[in-house]
Image (cartoon, rainbow, N blue to C red; front, side, top):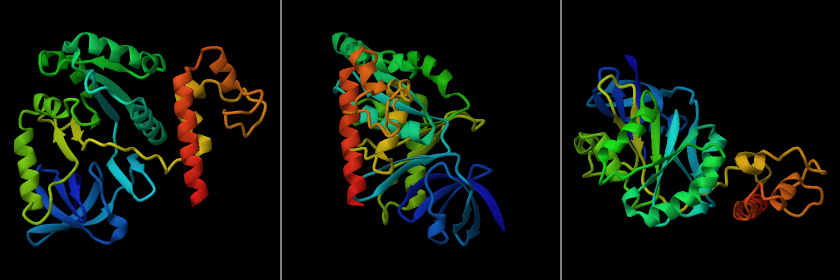
Amino acid sequence: MTQTGLVVASHGRHCVVEASDGSRRLCHPRGKKNAVVVGDRVTWQISGDEGSVEAVSPRRNLLYRQDEIRSKSFAANLDQVLILLAAEPEFSEMQLTRALIACEAAQITPLLALNKRDLGEAFARAWSRLAPYAAMGYPLLGLSLRVHPPELDGLLARLAKRTTLVLGPSGVGKSTLINALVPQAQAATQEISRVLNTGKHTTTDTRWYWLDDARESALIDSPGFQAFGLHHLAAVDLAGLMPDLRAHLGQCRFHNCTHRHEPGCGVKDALAGGQISASRHRLYETLFAELEAAQQRH
C-alpha cells in the first residue's frame, strides 16, 4: 500500500523518507525518473525492512549548481535560502553573487546573515561590503552566534513556518547555528546515519531538521562548497538575475545587448552614473564570459 512521505536525507541511490507519523525508513527510488533530493514529497511503499519510492510529486522549485562535469542538487520545495557568511574568514563576493543568482533563477527568496559580530572592526568591514546587497533589497541580519545566542530570536521569526536551506562556506558557524536552533541535531544526525547504514554508505551531505514539534518550520543543512557553477543558466539571462543590473534593462539601443561593450547600453550608462558599482559589473562580465564559453563548448 502506497503512502506519502518527505525525503529528509539522500545519498547516491538511497534516501531516508519520513512518513506522516514521523517515522523514518531507508528507501530506494524505483527507476531513474524517481531520483530524489532532500525536500521532495514522494509516494512510497514499504518493502520488507526498507521501502521504495514510487513517484516524486512535482517540485515548486529546486536549488542546484552545475559545472562542466556534473550537476549537484541542494534541496527542493524551499521557501527561502539562508546564506550564512562571517566577518572571518573573509567571504568571496563572487561566491555570494553565484549563490544569489542561483536563488533568483530558482525564484527562491535569499536571506543574508553575517556572523561574528563580536569581532568588531572585521565585522564592520564585512557589513559595509554587504551594504550594496541590502540596498538591492536582500534582507540582511547580523549575528554573534557564539557570544549572544539569544540574538537568534530575530532569525527565528524569519524561519517560522518556512522551509529554509542553510548555505555557506566552511568556517562561518553553520554547525553552531544548527546546534543552537536544533538542540537534538546530533541525535537526528545519528538517526539518519543509522538508517542509511554508514557502515556501507558514507553519511548524507544534506540533512533536514524540524525546528518545532508541529513540524511547520524546517532547516536544511548543506555541506560547505568551494565552487558554485552556474552552467545551467544562459549568459543572456544573467543580467535579469542581478537586481542592480535588472533595474536598467530595457533601456538599451540594441535588443540583444550584452551590457559589456555595446553603445547606447542602459546598464553601462547606469555604471557610468554610479548606480551600478564597478565591482558588480566586473562580476557580471566574468560570469557572462564563463557562461558564454560553456555554451560554445556544448
